[in-house]
Amino acid sequence: MADRQAGHADAPRQCASAVVMVRPATFYSNPETSDTNQFQRAIPSSAAETLASAHAEFDGAVDRLMQAGIEVMVMAADPLADTPDALFPNNWFSTHADGRLLLYPMAALNRRRERRPDALQALLLSHGYSVASVLDLSALEQVDCLVEGTGSLIFDRRTGLAYASLSARTHPEGVTRVAQALGYDAVIFQAHDVHGRPVYHTNVMMAVGDSAALLADGLIQDPAERARVVDTLVASGKEVLSLSASQVDEFAGNALFLDSPTQGPCIALSERAYKSLDGRQQQWLQRQASPLIVTVPTIERLGGGGIRCMLAEIFLPKAAPRLAMPP
Image (tube, rainbow, N blue to C red; front, side, top):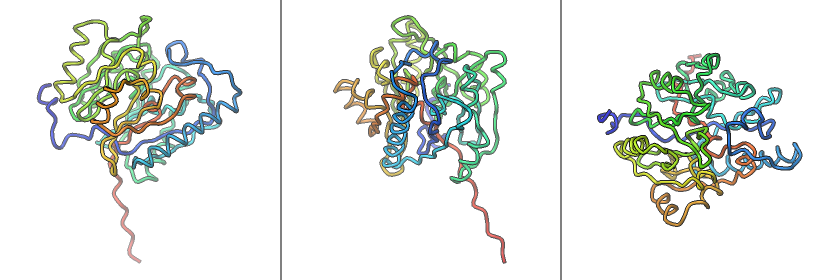
């Protein structure tokens, strides 16, 4: 593993410059996920008001990312499917530099309806991206072997590592299956909030960039496991910023390192998350990447997911241009 952790010049990019986002057709606090998502909160408002707020926050996030030079491909949610969490597409698919599209097993029945690989591939193709093959792991739902995409898994693509905090939505066998398919080493651990509940998705407590990482290491209660995760990050060349449990509650861990063609390294996080960081932490973050701060309070409170959950990174190769036929 040491050789892989050192990285290689021809290794895959860690930070994407393109993302897919899904504009919701419906939006409310999903009753099928509330038992395991401790971040969901009810907000007294009408369905129309809630959806309008979600649309305004979504559109503002799209605009902010595009202004920073990130390519944003927007897919509309299926209006007939009633998928309140459709704006969190990173849970049902991931893309990879070898052209693979992975589809993941998900816990909630209404979230499984979010998977629309044909519509996704049509969107990607229209933007010049090529899908070489599809690995569909959704059949693992039949044996409750769940792993919800880059919610459950934090990939360090340059060093071939997949970090995963176990929960009802992140099964060790599911993590192992994905890691084996990608040729990655799995770094599996257990993390709990201050009430002793498992952290439902790894991406609410951890983010990994090229040379920096955010980690709520205090949520990993076993000292040996905590040291193993931190040591692995450091050995792979990461400078680690420790987050507190209260900062995780403010979505500070739910961030995504990106690579803008015009602005260079940047990190998407919410206004709520950024404000939870103290001055020293904000300065540290600014040294690592330009903060792309978005305002998504309705989405965070009702949906229980933040800006990182809203972004599905695209690492696919560009499709070869079609040659015009001679007249």
